[in-house]
Image 1 (cartoon, rainbow, N blue to C red):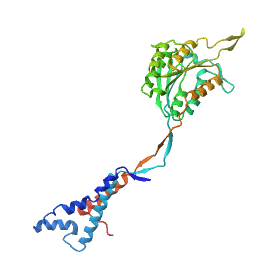
Image 2 (cartoon, helix red, strand yellow):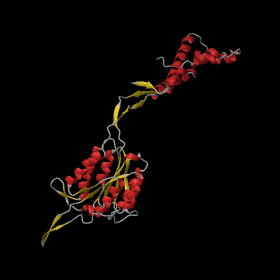
Image 3 (cartoon, rainbow, N blue to C red):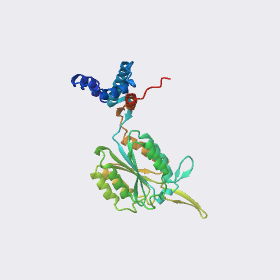
Image 4 (cartoon, rainbow, N blue to C red):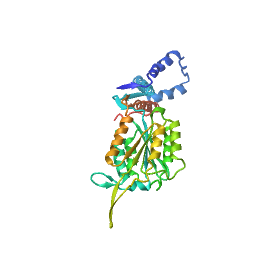
Length: 331
């Protein structure tokens, strides 16, 4: 459907007629020396035959140029069909641990042992894909915390940035407190009831400037809800030349601190020992922080004013050219 953004400007269409009617006519020049060149402009060397039709053509060209100019000023637009955009008040920041310990291969994915980060990418990527309509942000942390993606509706880009992350990219240690602090900084200006930080780690806080519990207290004051996920198997069989032995690859996981962080902020702590538990956690997060179903209508708009504006310029150019002595080629 075509519409005009400023339709009231069409009231300017009769302006030239009003000026002609109410403004006094220009006095006629009595000096023939001044009158003859003017006539030559229109009649070509003093010929009067056919001068009236040419003047009529010029008048109609000028009128058409004025109509096109006013139409362009009214900003014609083409409105496309209404599109439904799912809107959600959720602002989700994902904080993913990239410390050295995330390279432990204690997760099975497609009948193959993979490291913890690979499993996280697989499950968190599906979670991001499902959050249609949410603003998603990504924090990567190790020895330091980095904002990899600000809050955005572009879930595909966030997922790509997550898949491109690598172990050790942010350092070998684990700065859990700094990751929470950075998440608070990015969420504090968002609507208070929908600030959510999901933090995934497999260790304890060994680096950074902020203690995790103090960061959690700040998050509680800023009304940022923190869900913490402790990742890593409880038991792994290691085979060597001397036989097999059982080890706990998650012995460094500080579950006490992760539980305290979640409790202080109104979130929950989850434990992911294998890929199925990790998938279940993200499905549960979908239930705890549901996607809102409110829809907002959007109509794409395409500006059409360049067309009448271009036509006005062409018509004005013809009028000026004809007045200056140019004539169409008559063959």
